[in-house]
Amino acid sequence: MRLMGDISKDINSKFPSNKVKALINIKYTANWLNSHQNSFFKPFGISPQQFNILKILKGAKEPLKVQTIKDRMIERAPNATRLMDKLCAKKLIDRIPCPNDRRVVHIVITDKGLKLLKEIHINVKEDLLENLTQEEAMQLSDLLDKIR
Image (cartoon, rainbow, N blue to C red; front, side, top):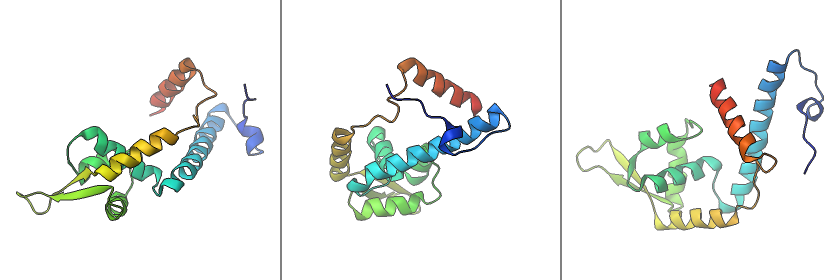
């Protein structure tokens, strides 16, 4: 088992209260997670947000409106349309115009997109929460829900 980290030592700082320390720790940890995820997805040529879009489309099992995808994203990306443009250019998703309303476009994952998701799943080696037990992971999740 690894030694536990300490935000005070990691950023060489003292905090006026435990609540301030917890808030800084959440932000610091979120950035740490983002950095690890960006590094993991880089060889696959996509970002974590693009991965999220692909997972949403795979899980939907039907074409979705762009707004529906935006609403379901973990990170509310204001640039979601641009992210989808890039996925479309890589042939990982397709746009399907709505026959009844030209303003509406549906998005669907392609076979190439499904294949990439499978490849990513096979290559997932590290568990960023490996230092937590199942019970601790549930407690953490419950605490984060309580904050929101």
